[in-house]
Length: 143
Image (cartoon, rainbow, N blue to C red):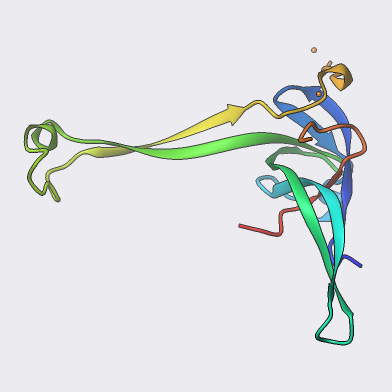
């Protein structure tokens, strides 16, 4: 019933990264947002001849493709936040409108742990919302 391609989690490297069975050959690109999800109940429109509208899915996690290969991709949970650092003048006049008095905005990117089944972590050569091998994944529909 879905109009999107689904993939599966095929390897949990560690608490920060996992592998899905889709890659360049499946039109996945570096930086794509990936949703790990449970397919939900089918939604039917009782006012439109019981038309099937799709499923109300449960999103376990939203991840980003950080490494891409022909037939698989490595995904991580990446958080980007902007932090404003006021200038000395803005701090001194904090009770006054300070537009135009300088300051800087820092963009910080953080890689966060993914809630995985720790017993399924297999590492990498050189683990409800717990993600497990076989979970479904897709290119994010939202955002």
